[in-house]
Length: 108
Image (tube, rainbow, N blue to C red; front, side, top):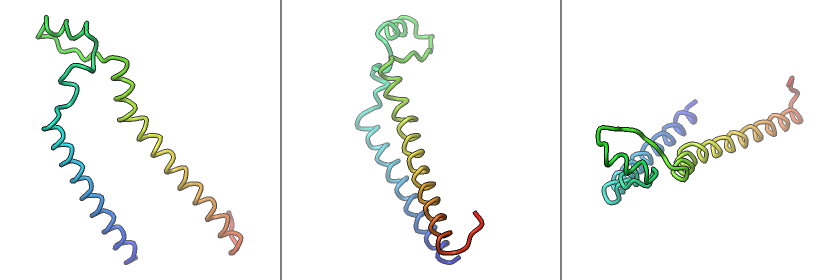
């Protein structure tokens, strides 16, 4: 139990520090280079013109390129990484259980 506690302590401390590091880098980059959404590349030129003419309107219309890039970075790529990682964990678990059953009697 002590090994589990110590390894989790190191893991969680490292993960916490890495997250803080990423947040600080993100804030630094946001100051130096404001996010592209402020430059209007997320939408169509017709919608930008409509926003300039009607400042009361607050509608979020995105271009197809922005939609594809944004959804890939924020959802699809992380989802694929997570699925791949858990698939590998499952494969190793199955192999471990099968090898364990060869050495010790099991009821799987």
